[in-house]
Image: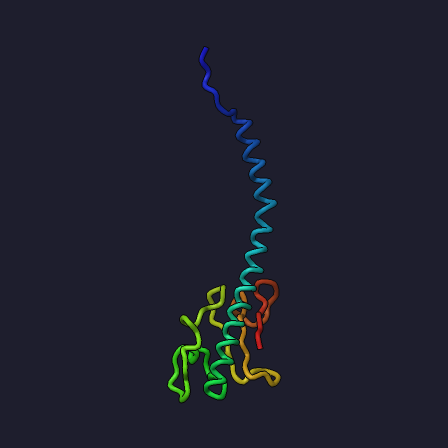
Length: 131
């Protein structure tokens, strides 16, 4: 008698349950890493802005009125572009907030408003401020 060898339905169900359990243990850790990675990217981009803003200030004498002036400006002594590429969006696809002068005596205010793009918030929605 020639029987086809294969898996029974019970064996397949056991494998699916095991894979589901493994996925439920691994997935939350992976998604929490994504959130912290997005925040680290925003902080790194803002540090790049800081370097560009300081270089601009050294050439011009003060900080730009808008962050787009790091790419193109007709001010005297402008020696840019001060950013190698177009002004990036934050990791969540929102514009960075840039104001000069900044709050509390800082020369400028630079922030990412987090995932929700709104001021304030907690967790992924928390603002990331660089002054």
